[in-house]
Image 1 (cartoon, rainbow, N blue to C red):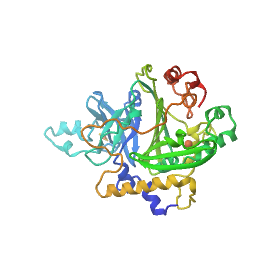
Image 2 (image 1 turned 60 degrees about the horizontal axis):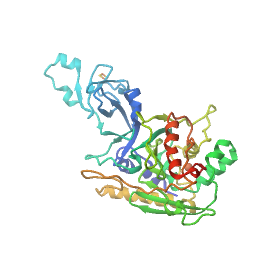
Image 3 (image 1 turned 90 degrees about the horizontal axis):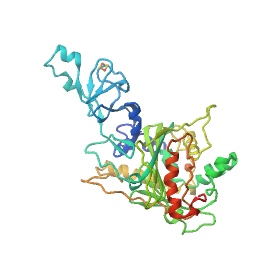
Image 4 (image 1 turned 30 degrees about the vertical axis):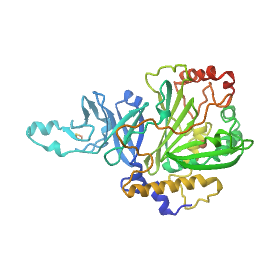
Amino acid sequence: MLSVQENEQLTQVGPGTPMGELMRRYWHPIAAAAELNERPTKSVRLLGEDLVLYKDKSGTLGLIERFCPHRRVDLSYGIPEEHGLRCMYHGWMMDETGQCIEQPFEETVHPDGRFKEKVKVAGYPVRELSGLIFAYLGPQPAPLLPRWEHLLWENAVRDIAITEIPCNWLQCQENSLDPVHVEWLHAYMGAYRNTDRIATQQRGSSRRHQRIGFDEFEFGIIKRRILEGKDETDDEWAEGHPVLFPNILLVGNEARATFQFRVPVDDTNTLHVSIYNYRAAPGASAPKQDVIPYRYVPLKDDEGRYIVDWTFNQDYMAWATQGPIAKRHLEMLGQSDVGIILFRKQLKRNIAVMEDGGDPMNVFRGDELGLLHAPVEKVKFGVRAQARYVRPEAGDTPAVPQIEEVMGTWVNYLGEEATLGR
Ligand code: FES
Ligand SMILES: [Fe+2]
């Protein structure tokens, strides 16, 4: 349990708050790059700040304050020009730094005036990587954008699923330090609902947990589990799953790896960005993707109830129903929660490092960053590789044929047994 004050410290993300400042030390995904191909402006709320993301005609990405400095209209309705975003109301134009660079009527009346030089809104750096657009809202100089090996796999197919979840980021991330929920929320509740697709999807994860363990490592925490009938030689204990500080889960193996970013929108909303990476087996080629597809995942059904027929939707339901901000002063933690306790300590320790002027964990600086390798499980014969796409959350992806093609290369590589379920 946390005190009310401790809970506020870990959940408030606005400017000037301890967690808000910690989160401002990291790059966060805010959109799929393909979104801007369809519409070149997107309203974005990140860490409690209202912003607009745009791509101008020269291809430059900008992330600036959402409301026009003139008379405050919403620039997500603005017009991207060759260099900058023009306000649709009176034509003022801002560049990607937030600097006003044109004021048509002012310049007509005062050709030598310098008014526009005094007008500047917030402008933040953005970068594209693996089909996602990342933003950094913290102090300059910005750290390097992390180059996680599995996110940068070449010869791979990717798929992006984004979900807007109406709760604080911390309850999403704490779920990743909670192995026991898999047995209940996914397997047991799946069996209770007894639908074919759930039975197929969650086969293999229904064994009881015997032991869980957590180790801090270079990039965060490794979580481990021993299920009934297994021992310490099982990958789930021996290798474990990396939770990347402060808000990322990496799950997968050498063939497929998923990153889940729990991006704080504000104190009571989270943008959940999943990117699935499917790599071709050695010696094989992945189909080429001109554009990495993305989709927004539905949360509720026609009756306004949370959808719980898919694994990740079950998680989203659990997180959101803990409330906009979970009341941690009322919780009663047990042995299943030791990973959560460790994670909260890690957060507090890194806030202290930052407040002392240091760089917290996973802030990378220097001239150049090599690939960051976080450990994942090995592909195992007849156990891990799946050539058939199993939907992880509600909604359809157009990438299914490509995913099945690239996963099929592992069947050829590993042998037919690789298709026999998980
Ligand atoms: S409100 Fe944007 S130019 Fe006037
Ligand atoms: Fe889960």
